[in-house]
Length: 172
Image (cartoon, rainbow, N blue to C red; front, side, top):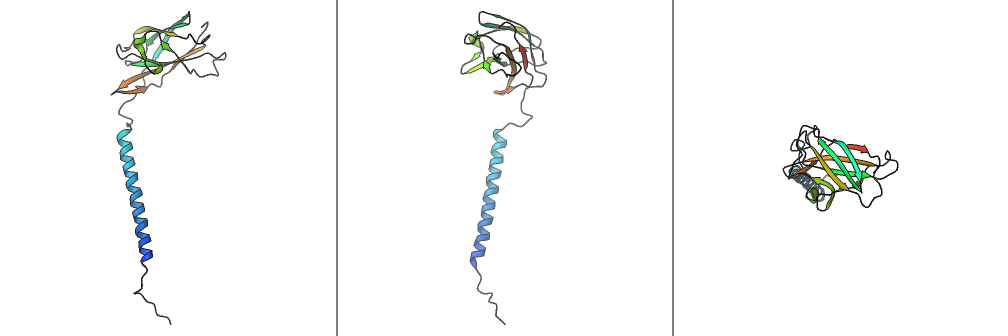
């Protein structure tokens, strides 16, 4: 029979186990760090959002001289801080999502560098109130569809509302 020498142990196997344990510990600590960072920087679902009952309605419109006049009403239950306006000039408005941004003719409502955003923070759009807004579309021959999406601002964060209103335009 052969003698088994237990005194001569290989240290190579032990060092591989230690390296695997260190690798797992490093990976877990990075995962915990990323989780903590994401939790801190991303808002949770309860912090702020646009309330479901926030809505704008287009009561009437008029097109003359490459100016689109919209009469909007806040038909929701909350004050609106602004809205995005997009339009389409496709001949078949059912196949094209509005992507053309329009600027308000009043500079006080426009946000520099963000076309199509109409900011109403200086004079919020209160519940049940109605206002007229004029938008220019000089670089386009016609408009066939317009879409309005309201937003609210809470704690300096902008939250888009789900309730968009889209209408087809005649004669613009």
